[in-house]
Amino acid sequence: MSHCNLKLVSRTAALLGVVLGAVLAGCGGGGGGGTAPVSVSNTRALIPGDFSFEGGAVTVQADAVASAGIVDVRATVTKPDGSQDPSPVLMSLVSGSTFAGTYDAPPNLRGDGRPETYYVVVAARDTASNTGSSRRFSFQVPAPQIPAPPP
Image (cartoon, rainbow, N blue to C red; front, side):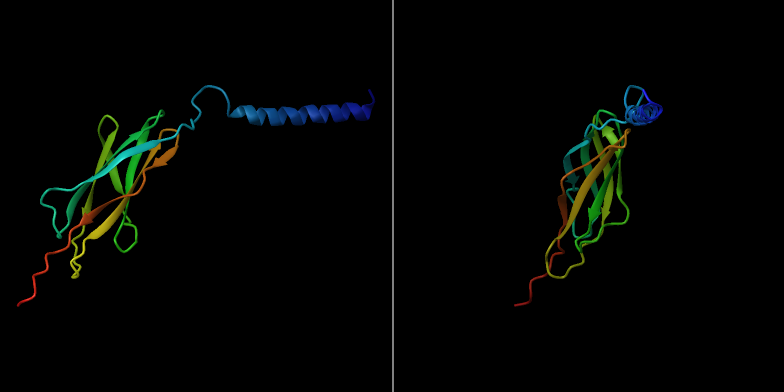
């Protein structure tokens, strides 16, 4: 082999070693992050029986499951005007895979007799930083009772 061919083979081998090393760096055992999906399901808003136009505590619940273990579950609430509430609902494990948190719904001060609808999406993150979220669901704050006009 000539000197030029030997240099070319040497450089090619070195480049191949660098590429192979970079590819293999993330492989193998030892705690790398998984890519299994995080499942968020069975979402619901639990409204107290005496819930009225005055608003109040709404319990948001969801089931969150991941093979790597769940570390964070929170709900984002979109208000009737389309804006997001700036404070997410932080949810805690209540049993099994069920998480719950409380949203303090403001009173419905509309004067047209219509309820106000709030939309909720629950998101979860696992120990490997994989995330998943629910479909959007809703709850309503009823309208105040408008007295009938006088006869």
